[in-house]
Amino acid sequence: MPDTRLTDEQEALRKTVEEFAREVVAPVAAHHDETKTFPYEVVAQMGELGLFGLPFPEQYGGQGADYFTLCLAIEELARVDSSVAITLEAGVGLGAMPIYRFGTEEQRLQWLPELTSGRVLGAFGLTEPGAGSDAGGTRTTARLEGDEWLINGSKAFITNSGTDITRVVTVTAVTGRSEADASGTGKAEISTIIVPVPTPGFTAEPPYSKVGWHASDTHPLSLVDVRVPAANLLGERGRGYANFLRILDEGRIAISALSVGLAQACVDESVKYARQRQAFGAPIGTYQAIQFKIAEMEARTHVARTAYYDAAARMLAGLPFKKEAAIAKLFSSDAAVTNAREATQIFGGYGFMNEYPVARHWRDAKILEIGEGTSEVQKMLIARHLGL
Image (cartoon, rainbow, N blue to C red):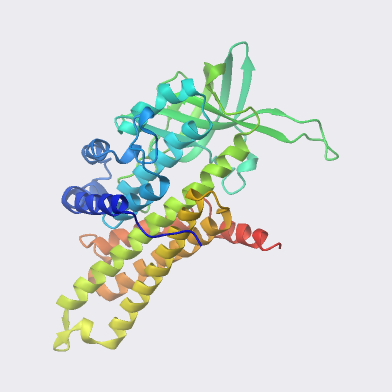
C-alpha cells in the first residue's frame, strides 16, 4: 500500500488553504451564489497564493508540488464553496494539465506560465450535446487545410469557458476516419486542438441556468469555421481520445477530493447546528436520532477521504490507479449527496432556506455524481477491472 500520510509541506499547505477558505471565500460565497456571479476577486487571490500552479514544475511558473497537494487544496475550498473549488479543479486539471501532459515544449512555454499564475483560465471542450458518457461519439470536426485546422462543431457544459479571463480552450475533434469496417463506417480519429480565446468563429454561448455551482462559469460553445495554426495540435494526432481518458482518470481523484470537502462541510454545519438548536427542552444533538445521523455522515466522509488519498498516492507512486480513482469518485460523490440530504434534514425547515450553507451544499452535491464520469461509468470501469 502506498503511503498516504501527509508531509509537513502538505499539511502546511492544507492549513493555509483552510484559513484562506474561511477568511476570504466564506464571506462572499453566499453573495456570489445568490447573484450567480463569477468570483474574480477570489480567483485572483487564489492565483497569488499559487494554487493554480501547485502540481507544475517551477520552470512553467508552478509551485513544484504534486497532484495530491492540489487535491488537498480542492478539498479545503469545497468545505466552504464548491463553485470556487471546481474553478480551481477545472482550471488546473482540465485547462492546464492537458497542455503539460501532452504539449510540446513550445506549447508549454507559451501557455503554462499564465495558466499557472491564475491570471488567465483554460478549459477543456470535451462534452457535446450528443456525446457525454459516450465521448467517442464526438461530432465536432477539424480538417487540415494547408497550415491551419478548420474546426466546426459544438460543446456543452464547459467549465471556465466564458469568463473575462478565459484565454484558451482545448477541444476534441474528429480529424479523420480509419478504413471502413464491416458496418460500412470507419472508426473516428479523435485529436485535441488548442483554440486561443478570442478566435473568430469561437463563441461561448449564454451561460446555463443551473441547479447548483452558481458561481462557477459554465457555457455551451459554438465553433463555426474556426481556424487555428496546424501547430496547435495537442499531442499526437489521433491520440486525443486516449489522452483525455488519462486526464479524466486524474480528474476523478480531484472530484473525489471536492466531494469529500462538501461532505465534511455538511458534518461541520450539522454538528454546530445540533449543539445550538433547542427542541423539547434540550439541544437536538443530545438526541440519539441526530447523533446517529451525524456519526454516519462522519464515517462516510472518513472512508471517502481514505479512498481518494489512496488513489492519489498510487498515482504519484507510479502504480495503477484507474480502478482506485473510479472507486474514490463513486463512493465520495455518493457520500456528498447523502450527507447533503441528511444535513438538510437535520436543519429541518431552515435547511430549505438559502441563507444556510447546507442548502447550497445540497444544490451543489448532485452534479458530483455526473461530472467527469457518471456513477454508472465508474461502476463500468470497476467491473472491467474485475474481469467482467
